[in-house]
Length: 177
Image (cartoon, rainbow, N blue to C red; front, top):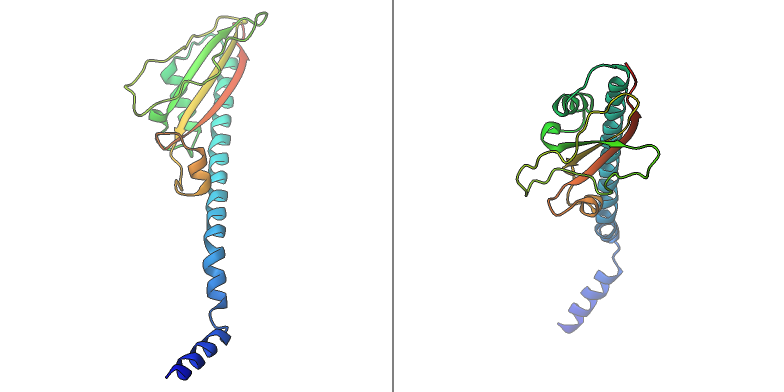
């Protein structure tokens, strides 16, 4: 009996049928996490590029359409219409427009004013329309839900709310009438 069990174990040790399965089980999770992280990074880059483009196009319209003073909600609606890949843009986008003295130091807060789902709705921090030849800073911050929150990239970039922030900042001079 002992001899049969010993010979069966020896024969099992010599077989190589499961080698590919063992390699697959070891390698697949790492490759899968890399693929999901790459997809998440691609989506983040796409959404950030769309936000930057939408802000730039909107600021171009503001600069060239002299004589009008677009308000916060109007600018936000235009940016959201142009930023196609940002879902729930109206609720997740927050804008700041700040007047700057071009001959003094920059006084824009370093931390952008983003939406916070855990807080009550806060009023806009700063939003001032500029006069002729004034230097203006427009900053947009959108909170985005990751597509793959359990991937390595998704876990690395989210905050305590489970979202990540995309910001786009641009500076322009209000053209004279």
